[in-house]
Length: 102
Image 1 (tube, rainbow, N blue to C red):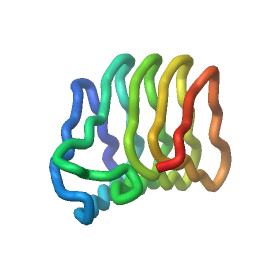
Image 2: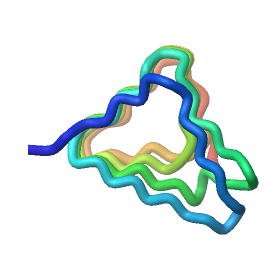
Image 3: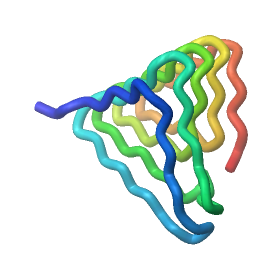
Image 4: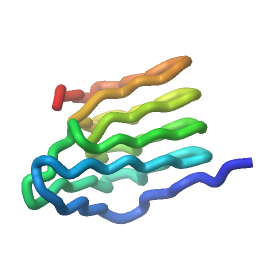
């Protein structure tokens, strides 16, 4: 059984342009409504990888940075935005969203 991650406040990833983050989560990733993932210090969305064995849910008007790899599904609520890519083995559901290639 895996454990999920709830992101309920803004998250800051600080690093250089060549730094790489690989975040592996055994369960779900849930981002609360209005919460933002910020990249600072030159960090780039193309170098941030979120790998999960569960579902991913991005809340209303949230903003996410990085490449999401989900074994199950990705659901992006109304008004949420992503700088990155959304890759799932089953389904990616979008509702009036902006997804920008990193």
